[in-house]
Length: 210
Image (cartoon, rainbow, N blue to C red; front, side, top):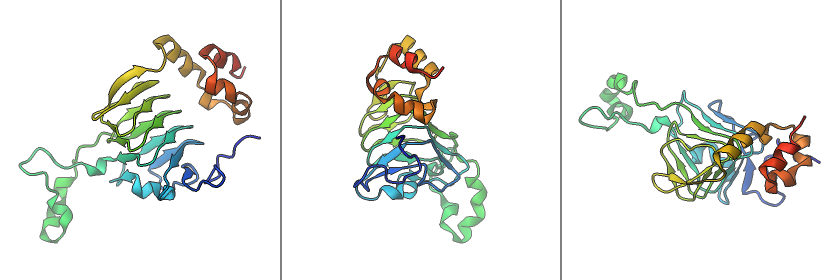
């Protein structure tokens, strides 16, 4: 039987694991099926505890089948301050007469949407900065701070995160992107779990729906 993408807690007896698609309510967050977050303290608080300074209009977009470890944080564009004057302090936000100068906060730096592709694994305590795009099949090592885009099927780590190695050759990465197993019908994925998890690229291509 195919797993249910609408169940909040997919692992029996493990309330620390939540599927994000049935959890999130913000129109500024889009999540694909089966992407999950794991946190022993409060996994259901993901929208407020892990997506920070999210005042819009930019979105956080997470693909299908992504694995997010405990403490992953997405810093959104609302965290930015003016940097072209003598001070970076956001005076108008403090109220009183200072609020008359709110126009000074209109043109804050905005790097656009933050996007995770499909089948992305973010390790423990990863921080993703505003406007970053993390490619399909990428892995981000624990404790990393991602400040720039991560190519498909690349392992990165550090602060700031730097490429460690590609998971596959350029040719095989192109083949994997073409087969896009995450877009297969759920029943077809169920029938080919072992190939998706441990088969070769050629095996995956052979298993693709006609």
